[in-house]
Image (cartoon, rainbow, N blue to C red; front, side):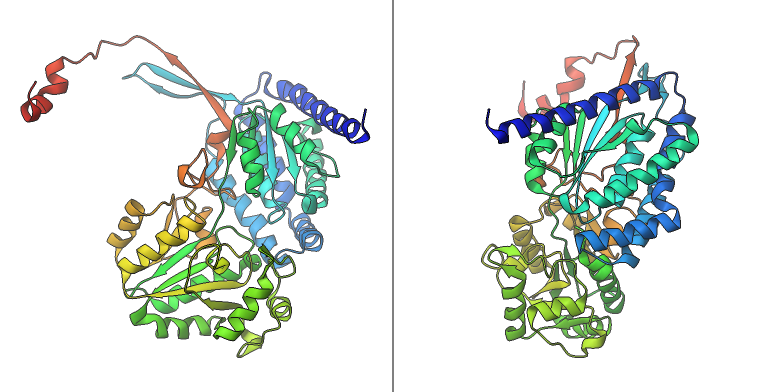
Length: 474
């Protein structure tokens, strides 16, 4: 038997054994369980990442190992995303009867899925697996993580912290596991085929493989956050929020603004405001230099992705005005599509600006951009006209319209909006996903419905067709 085939079989067997242990641990976990047991496990996993010294260590290791983002922002992200999730699920019931409707005669009972598999990205190697763990445990599941190759050591550290917390309250380590290093496609594929639900955040190749695995799957789509600034907007507030969002963790978030579309009548004032908040518009020569460096042979340059501003500019061999206070660069936009990769997701401190005549033209431009990349994920609007937000929600292929907010802070849930906290945003059919909302606890449980007989509600034909017959005849 070829050596490669033997290695693949060994890797498959390793994952199968891991999932088998998870099944045993999960069966014990739910035996006689009440809400307190599930909540305690979720809180143990949460404190593993939120305890300040551990959070700092995870953030430092994440930047060291992946080369993406910065320590300060990752520390904030780990804390706020986890705290927000805990707020969302604190009073949620996930054990036993969760609802009863006298009118319909239906009682709903929460049931665990079993063993969840989660493929997690290098951009958030601690926050995303922690989010998945907490949701899984809250609903009575075991979970096996498959980290990206760059994020393996971070995931290992996180699991050490989780298991240390488990020891305090007598929880089996096998309830939360990870695929051992080195990562491989064989291991990840076997995980996808062995668990009861597979969650994939990150690589669109992994998302496609998950949907083809034969296991129920939740994958999330590609980001390319596109934001419109119209003539009614508070320009300084818009610029401040866009700058804060664009630069957070060096633009690792799939919700970081990639494109801003500005109405022509206010573009000069807006650019002044953006400059005051660290944005530097590039002339054609400098913009071309950045594009040549950033889009290296059709791929994003790993030496520029999610790097600090001095590193980004050095790689591009570009200087900007008032460089010491520069926080990101602005590329003039013209075309859209593969011939203009700046119209897509950049995962870096580069923002593309399109100038249009009016709001209607901005909507058309946004539609073109989303058709190229980012359909289903999110669009933003800075405007005082709420009707325009509603028009975006009824006309563009997007699952979220973020109004007058810093996009990357808002899309995945915020303390000042109503979206559930998450690091995984479903993009619906537009993005090739099975969900159109933020991944949250409800995706980690089954519901059994006890259905009782009720008085008949059968309508007559006249009740149903009277209006139609009046208009069209019978």
